Image (cartoon, rainbow, N blue to C red; front, top):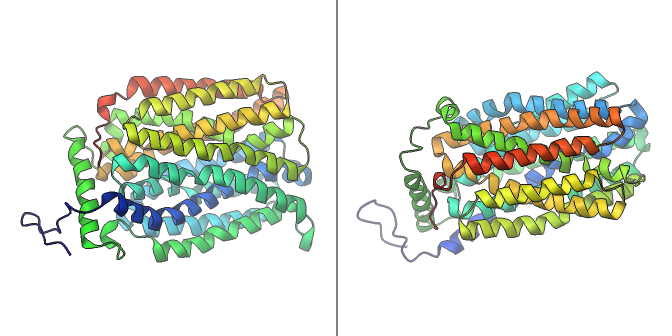
Length: 445
């Protein structure tokens, strides 16, 4: 063991292999966190596959479906900031476990829905249950990785989105195709029952294996803990006096950069909804009617997204550039969305464009969500990220109802996709104008 430093009393870290240390942390922290996010996104978006059965059995049309998705985000918005304020007090481990257990229960409860009011209530309560998981997980990453390594870890975490899109689509399609009528339950009821159990089990694993930062990690040596602590402290110093004014929710709300990032998040979440909730509908509208085929085709876009997202995240960390990586990704996604709206319904063309849109969406989201934790200090990070996420969730709440009502009124998603693409492009302008390169102070660790 290295001798303690005479100045700080901490073990000397000059000869420590930092890359090996962060690889060790990544191997211990990331797999469970990614698995939790996969399950989270499956439970949030499985309604996209279930809507076929809900329409058949309960008569839910696009407007009912869109409003149900919207109400999920209403519950999400109302409880996002309170959930993360609680996280700052009791820690990420207990907060994430509590969130996962409650959303699993609410997913299972959805199988008892038999009218529109119950559907709306179930979606709202699922949003309440899931509130805080995403910003809480990003906050946990900020306790383990310095900013120069965090974007690639955010990209690894965001693998959960395309994996859930691919795995969830195939699994949900198989459940809907194979289990309808078994035990007296409809296909969509089996879907919510089976996919609601994993988060309840994972909540127990989080309590057993997650720690709130390196100081509590028994599997790190004192030298490794000291190295991580020194890197995170250097990040705090680099942020300088411009962000020392932040201290919790009220002062984070006073910072214009938080609001600028929140407006950018509106574009990101509008794009996310188009990818996550409307991909099955877009493919179905292109002529794919069989629910099993629909699940398989819906899995194709996320698979490309995984590769592109990891490459973009790694390049962003290598260059320490964030703004243009996010902006370029969103521009590509917006134009892919516009192309889908005028594609004419050719299945091959639609799936290729959906793949481009998904890859660009995942890449832009990965880089964008590395920005708040770079800018905000530790005291503001949990609530600041939650505020940004909540603002984005307003757009997420509005866009499904908008697209649902537009499809009901026009018989097509084209106009809704074009409006969504315009919102994404506005977010690009806000990001490039509102966030200056000098606002993101980073040095390689």
